[in-house]
Image 1 (tube, rainbow over the protein chains, first blue to last red):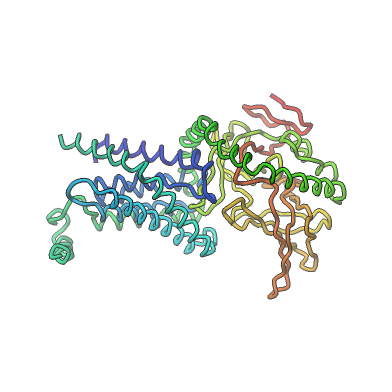
Image 2: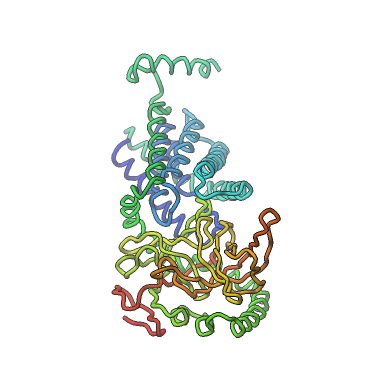
Length: 170
Length: 313
């Protein structure tokens, strides 16, 4: 991971996070917004593999845990996105760019896994105590949001990461 | 297929022979990294659960992200307010009829309520609200809302310690109680909304003056509240207005702020206690202009609406 790559990822995560809480809250569907930070993590994992995906997921999740208006126990999103980064890294194909279907499926899987891990950690820590139906509803809506936005956001992110990769290889 | 079967064997050898000699794809996740990161998460959760060890980190991140959220929210407000217009246009007739009947009902309640009549007159603006609850208010905008994925109902407002805001101050909107300040940075503050599952507010049923606790049920859309009276023989009346009873030294909640209206009462068969569903006056899906209740005469970098309803620079 070069310095420039880290800086680019950090900037992408920061922009995604701010848009998520300050822009998309106006379009929230039952309070659920698209998880743009997760999209950055998935893009990083798809372009550089699971090792990088996990580290980016952890760092991005930590930022989600600490940036206002978050009030849950810090470390919960870090854990959730770390797992998502791992899952996305597993899907990554070694040869060539991943197909559209593969990217959509990865995004759906990661959205499901991340929100589930986050909700499960909340149930274990009772932070706050949650109803099961409520959790399923949030996971479902989040998944639909993320899959809907994937064709709009992920190609751009993957192209950015692809260019960064090409620059590095030169 | 053979590759898949070989992989675990290679890994086991790798661990036995120390990491550097391991013949592995550098991009596939290292087990040591995974374990270290998961342990880091566990440590963070433990630290946060046991006390305020992470407060400085939260404050630091808030100092950076707070202004960014304010900026993005301000710049995108023309776009983000479009859904509101659409909502208003499509359901305008329904809304108007509903509001008219509601208004009539509310007016009647205000007239007949046993609670302090002056304080519960009409809340048609933040200025009016400040006047009615008799406290000075710092006007501020909501710049970020916590996502439902986080299962917490919180918001960021664009006023912080520089505007005289401190933790555990009451946040109100023109219609009623919004929540309380959890933590502040110099330019922003984080607010816990009363509909959050962790929120408890001391509430008073205004017709009987009976006190109880109003809890958020953490529901997603709009949000609703539950009132449980301390006196278990008392029954809250449907349509009753619930107001805050207030805390010592006005923190975290000042007294006399309307919270919501009792919509239905149901009793638990098991312990014969009664719970009332309370519809909050504030629409938590469309929060924008809110005010933070501050002591009169607070030093602030912005204009304060004082208790007499006048704007003080």
